[in-house]
Every structure is written in C-alpha cells, then in structure tokens.
Amino acid sequence: MKIELMLPLVVYLIVVLAVGLWANRRRQGGNFIEEYFIGNRSMGGLVLAMTLVATYTSASSFIGGPGAAYKVGLGWVLLAMIQLPTVWLTLGVLGKKFAIIARRVNAVTINDMLWARYRSRAVVFIGSITIVLAFIATMVVQFIGGARLLETATGLSYQQGLFLFAGCVLLYTVIGGFRAVVLTDAVQGVIMMIGTAALLGGVLVAGGGMANLIHSLHQIDPKLVSPQGAGDMLSQPFMLSFWVLVCLGVIGLPHSAVRCFGYRDSKALHRGILIGTIVSAFLMFGMHLAGALGRAILPGMETPDKIMPSLMMAVLPPWLAGVFLAAPMAAIMSTIDSQLIQASATLVKDLWLNYRKPSPEKMTVQVPRLSLLCTLLLGALVLLAALQPPDMIIWLNLLAFGGLQAVFLWPLVLGLYWPRANGAGALASMLGGALCYGILSQTGIKLWGTHPIVPSLLLALVAFVGVSLSTAPPSADVRQLFRRA
Image (tube, rainbow, N blue to C red; front, side):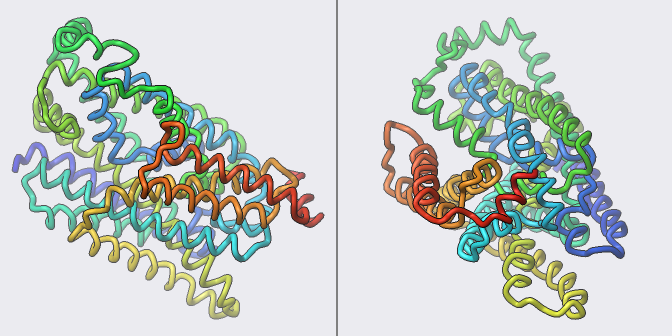
C-alpha cells in the first residue's frame, strides 16, 4: 500500500468526521426534528448547490458512466450531458413552492408534504415503505462499491475497506444529522471537482493533447469520434429512456426533493440553481470525457468499468491519484448519507410519530434517542447485507431508483401544480407506476424499445389524471393552501 496514495484519502475522511462533530455541537438546543432532519432550513446557495450535485452523483457517475464512454466514445459524452439540467429542474420545479408550503405546514419529510396535499394515510404509508426499502437496497450497493474501490486501489481486504468506509459514513451521519450531511456534501462536491480536473488534466498531458487523443481514437474506430458512437447503442428509444431516467425522473427522487425544504431564502435558491448547474456540467463533462479519451491511452480493456482507477494509476503521481481516489469515495458517501438520514426520518417522523402520537413530554426525550438509534440500526443493517452481497444486488439497485421515480414523480409535481389532484389519484399513480415498473423490469419486456421507466411513468400519469377526475376533488382548505404558494 502506497503512503502517498492513502494520505489524501485519510485526510479527507478526517475532514468529514470533523464536519460531523461540528454539526453535532451546532445542534444543541432548539427543535431537534427540524435541526436533525432538515438542518433548521438554513442552507445557503453554495451548500444547496453542492448537496444536490453530490446527492445525485454516485459511484456510477465516476465508474459506470466513464466506462460506457470508454466503450462507446465521444457520442456518450454528448449523451451524458443530458444530465446537465438536473439541479435546475429539481430546484426550478419544486424549490420555491416546496419551501413555501413546507414552512406553512412544518414539513420535515417528503411524506409530510404528501399528507398536507392529499390527506391520505395510504399515500403516506406507500411512500414510507417505498423509501425505506428502496434506500436499503441502494445503500447496500453503494457500501459494496466503496469497499471494492478501497480494496482495488489500496490493497485493503474487502472487509477492511467496508468497515473503514461504513464506519466513517455512519459516524458523521449519526452524530451530525442533516447539517452534517449537507456540509460534508459540500466538501465532497469540492473533492469531486478537484479529482475530475486532476484526472482530465493528466489524461490530456499523457496523451499529448486533445488533437492527438482524438486522432488515436479515430484510428481505433472512427465511430468513437462520431455523435452516434460505437456499438449502435445510441438509438432513439435508448436516448429517450436515458433522458427520462437520469434527468426528468430525478425530480421524483425523495432524497433530492427534500433538499428543497432546507434552503434559507430566495437568494440561496437562485444562487443554488446557478452554481449547481455549472458544477454538474463540469463534473459530467469532465468525468465522461476522461473515460472516452482514456481508450487512446489504455486501449483494449476487457472491463470498461475499470478505466477510471486504471487511468488514475497510469497518468497521475501517487499523491494526486489519492486525491482522485477520494472523488468517487465522496460521490458514494454523499449518496449514502442522504438516503440514510431520509430513511431514518421516514421511520421516526412519518411512521412512529404519526401513528404512536406520543405526548409532548415523551416526544422531547424519545425522538432524539429514536432518531439516532434508527440511523445507526439502518446503517448496521446495510453493513451486514454488504458483508455477503446477494447476486441480485445490481438489479435491486436499478429497480429501486426507477421505482422511486415511478412512485413519487407525479404525486410531487402534479400535487404542486394541478389543483384537481387528489389522494385517490395519487394512490393510483403510485401503485400503478410501481407495479408496471416491477413487472417490466422483472420480465425484461421493452415497450417501444424503451427502458421500463418510460411506460411506467406514462401509466402512472394516466392513472393519476383519470382517477383524480373521476373522484371527488380535494377539500377547499387544501386547494387554498397550495394555491397561495
């Protein structure tokens, strides 16, 4: 194990733990639920932008996406830029109305917002179960990815890497809550930018400049430098599916949407949209371009997913490679911590508090303890599952993310912008979208040649509109509450 490679990673882990401890000290006093789960609605524009980018960016952004660019070529770089407006869409569509209504109804979780809009226990229950199950599945995948990355790059065993990675994430998330999550997300966003810039710069230097690299790619396969790409992957149904799954559908991810509760004011929102879009564009372009150009430096790799760690070791000095190693670690950790705190909030706030309804005296004592315990137990459960990962885990990861979009996208968006939306329509949309996505994913059926998320969202939309129009409209007080936002 090279000390130069590990030192930047160790420094990074120490920094995120220090942020968690600082956030824990800031949490003393005040409303525990608002502070622990949404940071007392105090995020500025920079932190808002970075936490959204870091939450959306995961291991696939640093490993799978560049691996696809290595295989397909520059056409995949263009396709990846479909993800550029994700921050703009999330904050633009949900941000202002979400924040205004969340403050009116004291919403802390996505299901608080669903209850305020639809007044349906079934909607809240389906939403809660979907969040917990989906987040457990996706967190297991991220834990495995973090452990494998440490195992490959540092020489640690899989179990050693897993416990080091999981221990750090759990510690700062449990002790610091939402404030620690968003602040470490900001640190992680900076680390991802530095790592991306370092690797792309190293690739350009090692390849003798952009012109030489493009020429080398053209000699390997002319399709690698064409917009269509090599391998005939970039068909119109595929591009439509990709746009829906990684751009439009992201609005429906609860751990991204809940960020709209926590910013400070309109100035922070506008600054977050600008900064987040710029940072997202840089990361997506830089990571995927490095993967595509990497084929000119390391041709013939049988496993494209290994291109980023391989490039890291090939074109960077050990200490700078350690900085890049921290970048995918940051991407993985920033996804896990967001899901972990949201799953804990769902269990404590949406299920336990709403159904047990403890007295104010008991709630003051029990809620902090239960919140910390739920966060810790969820993390421990995911850690145990990651020790012996099941064979179906990758399928579960894809199913979970698509399922979240199929369940939440239309209830969130139409609930804000369509006065006629009601609880029956939202429930029909959630159940119809989830069932359609599960059946199509499991059977492998591709309607119109598209990914299952496309017909699932279409069915969910039709079910929402049809059932809402054929049942009683929402009450006057609900319409008034959401009309004034």
